[in-house]
Image (tube, rainbow over all chains, first blue to last red; front, side, top):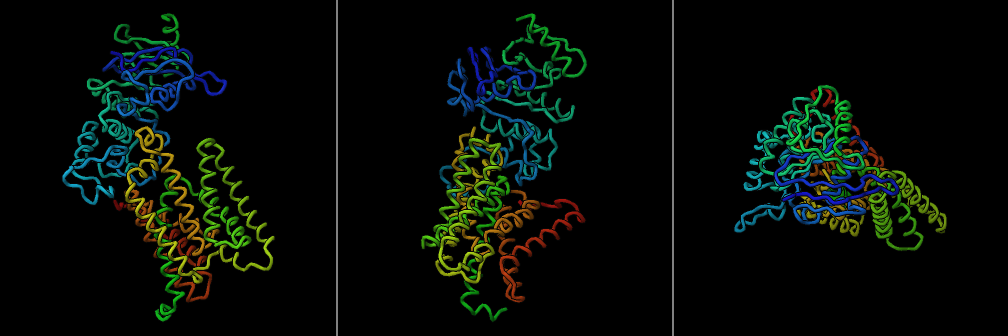
Length: 253
Length: 274
């Protein structure tokens, strides 16, 4: 069953057409990468799948529902460029963000009415999720004291905390060093056994190592299945790879 | 100074100073982390229009200033949700238009209004029982709200888009922060005046943000620092016969400068309070 289904989806900002007749499916358990140039509509596409924007034409289904109805089952990791590093907030606070309060029904205490601190059940939940991304020892650290790669792993833990079926990540490795990038992609590869992953990425040379499918978006969409047709990426900068990719996908269209 | 505590107006000044400091510390923290300092400055200055209108129409000044402050805050919030990139221009417009209205209303009011000067720089020694009741009500509302909705406020302040995706009513919480910040401005005007109110809300907050491990400890520490600066400022003002609002703000500014120097010498953020 396809977890995400897009049918003839078009979207424009005012008169500017950003996405035209986008069609693709993301199957259950698949690791899919969305690539394409800046301004090609990748982030707009994510906003449509998350239900933040509505398409002008076409149909989007996530787990057989509308994006808005499916929102509770989607984990989202936003781009890490807009983070306020001075904000006084701990890793535990970030991971628990937006989760329903968990308490034993028999022991409704003062902290449940004034939920400043987390109870043991909540802390255990956060610990288990942070353990998955290897950040459980940093629970009390201030988020601004972590490196870019560590912060991003915490953001992935935050998205996993609500036990989503689909994990969407927007440029998870931008401004992170090469080692940090590899760590995040191996983590995503591990997670892809448990849930469906949709990631927007610039790093074509790295992403093709891990993804099952690549969708190239530049106003229109081209789908390439890496399992059936693996790509031997030439070693070089991302731009070169992108040109190669465009030519190849253009031929297969 | 101890003898001075026997005077009712000094007692009122102390109670008012403490109440306003608690509210300003908490709401100041929220406006700083939400990057609303300029916005709150706009609201503070636009409330001058409400003060002028209240004097002209003969209604209570607190009421006039509150209506103006909350209306400008809502207007700015409505505009910033729709045209985020032009928010600063709009704040500038509301800021100066409000002050201009205050000046026009004053021109139209017969006689000289010495009262207006006291709203620019504060007159904590002229605080009355009614003012204290207003301040106490607002302090209770602010303290209860940030405790009950702490997690929602934290999520919206840290990552609004994510909070909205997780089903938190981000627009409502953002607007509530703005309205409570506006009302804080109005009550703080009596203590430090509308020109200085932003310093009372942002200077203690700056210090506590650097050493706090969580938003909660930042709010509490800001409130505590505000109380200390306000009482210290009052003592200086009484001892040297100076304007109280200016003493409070200058004392906070000196403390902030000393803190920054100490931070440079002893290194950044040795240990944070969680």
